[in-house]
Image 1: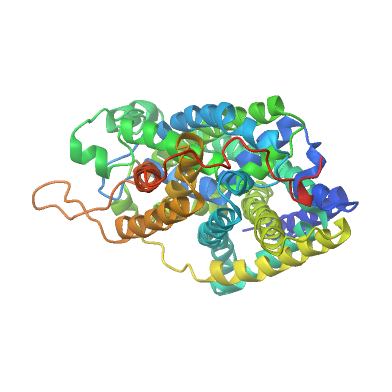
Image 2 (image 1 turned 180 degrees about the horizontal axis):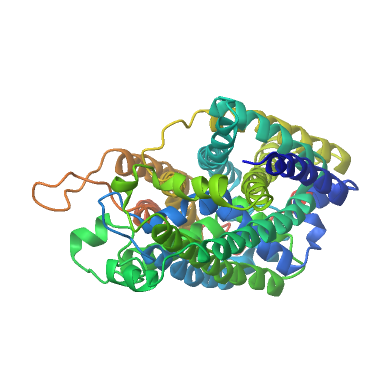
Length: 515
């Protein structure tokens, strides 16, 4: 890399925290810190949702999904998953989103607290915290991958954990001071830059490709979009099967965007239900276009690399785009795109820090202490927990050192432990009127335990003599939802009447949810 690229990276990484601090430096209340006083425009929230959910995993890993480790090509079949995202987010926007705005809530789990009780709200919040720690640990590690590669070009051999700590330190500066407003507006900048960088990379690639590459790509299956193999084993084990991707993707996104505080906090910062709906559905459309863009980059990289598969290239799929950025982009462009990749990691981490702090204060501290301290004290608590979770994230991010699978797949499969239980608890509260708090807690715990076994131990032989593989991750959430509903529903049969909490006036919202 040219020294100019390195200078751009340094300036960019310094500028993002500075911009975040300037945007959010005038925090006046806990509600402002956590949900921006419900004053953010829907389009900015939409862009923030996209930046938060994709970040580095999308940028460095999605182009490599064109390739399959078997030597064949997945093509564009991964794009079926965001088709399911659009469906799932539409359902969330009409089913769950109005319930969140009705009670002026600041977290997703306040609904469970009103429906079942504070213990269930605490259990779901703890599950969210654990899930975020694991998932964001993968994202932090993903952000360290291109940094280490860059430094190695200059003969500086660093460990991943050192890079993780540095990224966390830069991020906590604006997350600590600026709150959700800083996080959202920095996300908007980062998304614009790294999508623009991908378009520039595509333009540069177009000048380097041989004539007739599109015909060769079509013949090799690189442009394949749909996988209509409906055989039972294929549906269970392949994330690229049409039904698995669309149906599983819809249920997965209902959990990630309807029951995960990381995203729910975003649309709660919108001005109205209508704006929240625009942000949520719009994010599904935007992320589909973004996936298509990066998969097209991957197809062009395949042609640029001599039409070779992974075995012939001798590299991991996650390294293909990073190698091109650091080696072949023009001076200035490489630095800007690498900086955007790193800044997107910081944006995702900042989002997680603010969401975790919000959930800790509203779902755990306020509910279990039953205190209503003055707003200035709640704001201090929010910032204190932001700092605490930053330290914890640095530790968790440093723990991910194995890259046997593409990091985007690691990040998505981690949520399989808890997403089904979280979404299932919401459905249990909405559909099973007899269910009580103990029923919901038992169902939640049982689901997490069963899903841990499924994710870690259950293997399916896809064909006679073939190596057993795990259940495709898009099915994890659906299976978890079914387990929660069956267990919770069965336990609710012990009661002769509906839960007296159903239909009762909701409890006053915690202070951070102020209007």
